Length: 148
Image 1: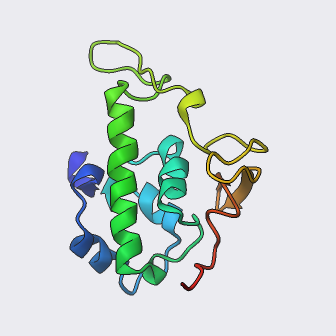
Image 2: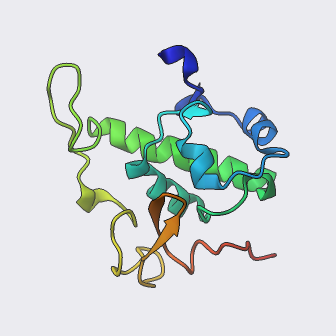
């Protein structure tokens, strides 16, 4: 089964990720959740990863800049490392049967519809992203990036 898994999310590097994004029109959230492409990012974590990277889940991956890819990789590493430091999500158990301590209250925007964004206080929105929903701050995560 593991032969079908993509690269470990914690082992991502900008060069390989930019190459995977190049010419690919997939939406960012769908790409990140595809375990055959990147292994280790689940729906519970992806909302906060994208929020921390200030990226909209519906962005096409081929539109990300090199800097955005680097920020995304950093967000993946930080959010997954934080979860690992807590033993994973509270609904997960490790090989020894111990429950994780990463509870929903520790999420930044995930599953916090209507609550204020931790950065700008704009209400977090729940949007449809394919067959799943996503939680975003519409101000911090615009679909169209602002040109600086």
